[in-house]
Amino acid sequence: MFKKDIQPGAKTKVKSSVQRGIRAKVLETYPLLEPHIEEILPKKSQIDQTKLPDRVTLYTLPSTPLFWQHMDDPILPHLTLVHKYPHAFHRLRVDRGAIRFVLSGATLMVPGLTSPGGRLPGEAKGGEGDEEGRWGEKDLSEGEIVVIEAEGKESACMVGVLKSGTGEMKKVKKGVAVEGGHYLGDGLWKLHLD
Amino acid sequence: MADDDAAEESVQQRNVPPAKHVIYCGVCSLPPEYCEFGGTVSKCEQWLKKNNPEMHAKMYSEDAVNEKLSSLSVEARAKAEKDSQKKAAKAEAAATREAEKLANSMIYIKRVERNKRKYVTVVSGLEAFGYDLKKVAKDLGKRFATGSSVTKNAGNTGEEITVQGDVSDDLFDWIEENLENIPEDNVECIEDKKKKAG
Ligand SMILES: [Zn+2]
Image (cartoon, rainbow over the protein chains, first blue to last red):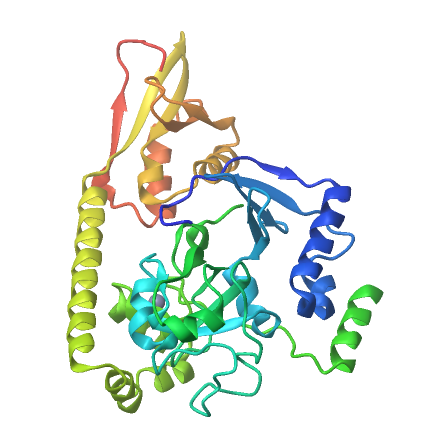
């Protein structure tokens, strides 16, 4: 989504009614953020929005990026937010070999997740980084928002939308897993607003 | 305040993990564990060593490095190595280009006659050295107790700072003393003799 550097548009204030809507949508999409919502989107604060290329809107408070949204698609978190509340998102893991592809903006392919270093829900293998509940138990369906972590790393390197269900991935072991997400070092990551 | 306390309390009650504080690399901006994938690893390592020795010791110990390598096949390792060499070379070239560009960037201080015996002093080129024109203009206004603002340049191709009054010489000294990024040789005073308004 953000392979190129971004020239941000104007920053505008989000109306309080719209702000309430965003808050509700965030809680609906990420129920586990509920205990933190006052930290993330305090009720009395003023959120700003910035138009980015390709019809993406970035929500910031005051200039710290929180969430972004392509048109009316689901609201996705900025990676700095994911880094703060990793437990609040569905997480998968790519093997070490796939990391450099993710960081160069390549489409994430299924084998990076199904190889021995990768993890899908229900696949905690008792190895390093397989602490309880990290990868969840239930399979995820196409269209769900996932955070991509990496073998041997603590923090996530990408967030995006599943192009295929994880149950299907386990069976087929090939094809596109996540496309057009937000990854470490991309244009959105490098964007600094003041 | 009360709200904050309430939020915190509810977090504790429900045994929810608190917000994590992730450190980001001062060189490449990624979490330091991902520095190895960029082209600035050696600079990143130096930064971490200085700013977070503890994390540095963990991340760059011999064991840690060997472990990383052993998790990849020989083939993948060779590829990754080649890739990171390429990236490093690229970053190096970019840094050299940038340094060359800076070495050739000039700051011009120009005295411009506005009316008879009324002058303004125009400074251009500061942005190439990473200075925020607005901020510098403000500092100059304070320093010379005069009007100082960011203005469009003649060709409308960029911005420069216009200071009211003829302060060329003092300005030259001020730049030398206060703007450390700029070598003295890169600053030049020129006089606008043609009385053409800038
Ligand atoms: Zn770094």
